[in-house]
Amino acid sequence: MCSYPVIKNLNENARTSLINLARDLAPVWVACSGGIDSLWLLHFFQHIAMIKVLPVFFDHPGVYPQERTAALAAVGGENGVIIEFSTKEMVAVWGDHKKDRCYRCKRHLFERVLELVDDSVTICDGTHVDDSPERRPGMRALTELCVISPLRLCGWNKEMIRNAARDAGLAAWNNPARACLVVDGKFGTGEDE
Image (cartoon, rainbow, N blue to C red; front, side):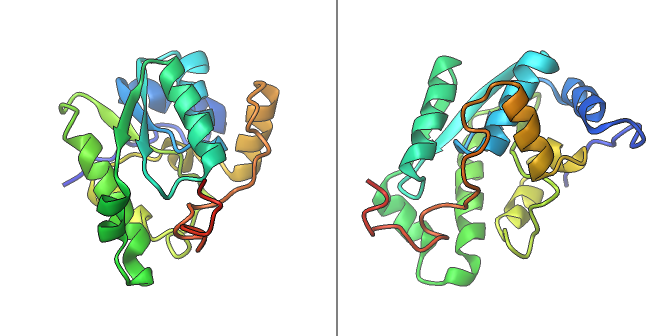
C-alpha cells in the first residue's frame, strides 16, 4: 500500500508547495521522458529546491526522437540512469489491445526502475493537473506502484510549467505536448527514426 505525501499547506503558492514537497521526498529519481513537464521537474528539484535528485530515462522505441535527444542530454549530463528496452520487448508489452496499452507500458517501465532503488528513494514523474486519467490511462500504473507526481500534487498545470520553464531558459519550454509514438499511432511509420 502506498503512503502518499500530505501537502502541508495547500494555501501556499504552487512554487512554495513544490519546494516543500521536494524536500520531504528527497532523495528522488525523476523519470525524464524528454518532454517539458519532466524536464522542468528535474530542473526545479536540482536548481530551486536543491535536493538530491537523479534523472532516469526509459529508452524504448516508442519515444519521439526529439524527446529522446532531450532526455539523453538531461540524463547524461547529470550522470543519470538510462534503462534500455528493446523493440521486441516493448511490442510484447504493448500487445494488440489499444485500450490498456498505455497502462501496461507505464507499469512495465516503472517496475524496472523500482528494481534499482531501495526504500529510501522516491520515484517521481512529470504528471500535472491537466493530465486526466481518462486521457492518460498509464496514470493508474503510477498509483499502483507508488510513483509520486509532485507537479500534480502541488497544483501545477501545463501553462504554469511552460511559463516557468521559459523563464528558467529551458530550450524545450514550448515543445508540443504529446504522449508517445505508440499512443499517437506513429510507431513504425518513419517518425520514429
